[in-house]
Figure 1 (cartoon, rainbow, N blue to C red):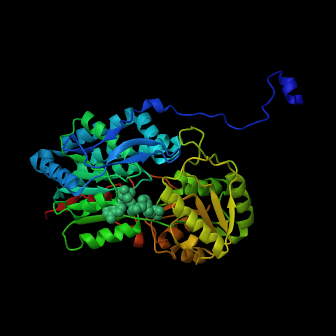
Figure 2: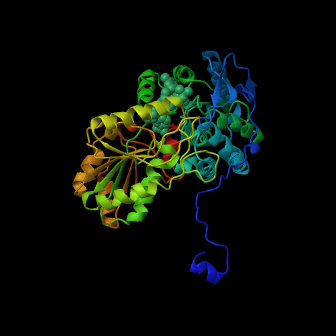
Length: 491
Ligand code: NAP
Ligand code: MG
């Protein structure tokens, strides 16, 4: 016992500060053995199915429909019917009521959704509970507010819905991306057919329950599950008026070619390779937290992740020392444990992609540091990683890794920081850490990125538009701008 403990007469201070397991209960969510497609407010029996798993344990969670061209066709027909038979003509104030209802139900059932999101996708429950779910509900609340105010959003123009929207979303934020897509589409009077990623269909399927609970007219929201080929059928379908896609740049380019000349409207939210730029006058401890949040949040499987760290040379050594120290405190493991900071990688394919790119970094001559942690034997895992000694030309500085891997580069002057940061085919986001407000403004004017965070990173708000430059795509989601992709204007 220490002298201090003796004086206080209390229990001795613990010597071991490791965390005891704090698992969230799986019982709050019921997973069916088998799911069909949700079409016209009914479950459509799938002709084929596949199994969706938990990436943390590789256990099978459910059988899910593998959408065929006919399934997509029926879903589009249901959406067209609902569009023509009342939804598009409903007063905005009536559409808003449904959106508010969905938002409230998501809040009421948030624990259930958060557990399912972590089970099926591998992300820490802390994040699905505190980020994905509150933001998904917030998007529905926010766009509910616009539904009866579209004429004020676009004065002197006549906003009209586009029609049937085909929406294709990725696996990194399954429910949140669903909300980003469905909320503005419905607020503007469109109907939708949405295809989730094949690795993470379960929260979208649970959302169908919310759609029913909210009494949304049948056919306004349709969900068809399946692989990329199901998405491709939606892209090609002749009666789809608009495609909204979030995913890889490669698939985005294919969709753009495929829809060219078809008259289909298109918005693309693709990859990124964001620069997180740290000046020597920053609040260093705060910047360390921002760097960690920027690249290890959601295992780095984030399109706007701060995956390229640019450090001003004068603070390079103390910053790297602090960063490595901070990495030792990250807890990697069970996504359902409330203390977990870094969960499982979403799929075997994604893990293989991360491993291949990390190996290329080692082969090209970068120096690797990995947080000391014991990774579970089952499932897909990757330790938080930092690469130093990285040259601009290395693949790990150029290509999107989409994993918990940070590439550190240096700069001397603000001009050099801007030039290096913009030297990428992407342009989705960036971060700037400095005490000087004038320097922040100087930087944001020059950085070619859709979002620039200053003295913070990975902050999202439904009122703020999000989207890219160059190969990061086009169109904006969120904010008033997010309405435009779902409206046409009869002048
Ligand atoms: P992806 O193939 O572009 O997947 C995105 C969505 O598109 C999924 O629903 C996917 O279905 C579907 N899809 C695939 N091929 C399609 C096609 N030909 N036509 C229509 N839809 C199609 O992305 P990924 O393979 O999951 O990930 C690969 C890389 O993309 C990642 O490593 C990362 O660099 C990037 N990515 C970016 C984002 C982002 O938020 N911008 C998100 C995810 C991935 P299936 O998943 O069922 O195949
Ligand atoms: Mg793919």
